[in-house]
Length: 439
Image 1 (tube, helix red, strand yellow):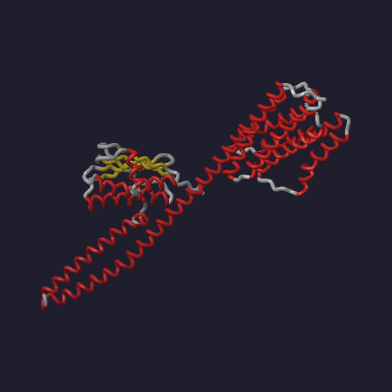
Image 2 (cartoon, one colour):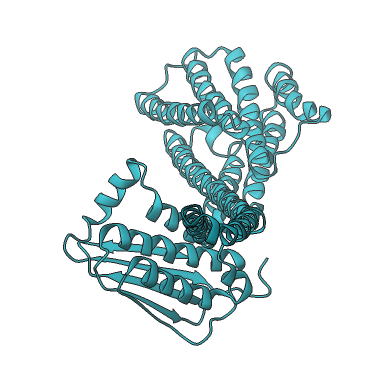
């Protein structure tokens, strides 16, 4: 009769079981949240490893050879589950029918080795080679999965499984003869901890990569929405200019003709007609202002810099803002989206000055850097309480400055809004210079 397992070996096995259970629970939790197949396979692998520990302890305590048979089977299946998890994670491998040969091997050979063979070496060597080969293959899969963002984690997992696979080869020589007890458990614990750390690092890198891709997609969507918004503005501008403004011009002409006819015969009617002409003029000016706000023709006809200067002059004339603009004589080539974004940013900034600090002197400064254009709008108005006030305004639906920043950031630029109570507002916007080789 085989004696009950030693206390030291039992404690080591219990510690290993606890760590394995924690890893299985972690992977199971990740799978339940993400439904990624490799999380499920890692959870299954560590669950099998936990079952393997339980079975071998029971075998050592009882001496019943049926437990040894199941220990050998579960050990092989654990190695296969870890290998399949690596394949699913690295390139989402698909299951093929002939893979069942590998699944059946631990079951068939364990029956031969435990039930039929009396020669320990002949029984152990094929099983050890299978276990070591599957583990080494797992390490190779991880080492080959060397993306830039997962290089460190893949290397940790790969080398851990390679060393673990080599460590399996000492089973017929040392561990089966009790030479490693209980240190073999502690070595396996180190490998388990390294694998767990590698999985967490690899998953974190993969999630970061997916988040980056999603961010790029959202930025692309944001740019597309801005383009559609500007296209709609252009369409409305053309309709107002080509249709509504022409109708007003025709009405003005007809009223002018009628007023001339009544100038001598009925002066009161003529005066009323002249008043109607004045109202039509006011309406046409309003339409021109709306058209200019929707899509300034100068931006399309002459370019960004004349459009910015015209916008400043328009605010000076129409709203009496004491605003000045300084900049170079010409600007480098910018993308259409960047030009529109800079124009809208200045438009929003001047509109905010007109609403909240109409008498405050305002300065617009444009600079050209080697790889970007910078526009800074500064006023000496009452200001506001920095980022906290900006967040409160956003929550209340005032999205002007927030929308400006989102539009600039979507282009790969930056938009900083700095303010303090009594210190005015300083807005600095930077957009990248367009390169011909950029997609």
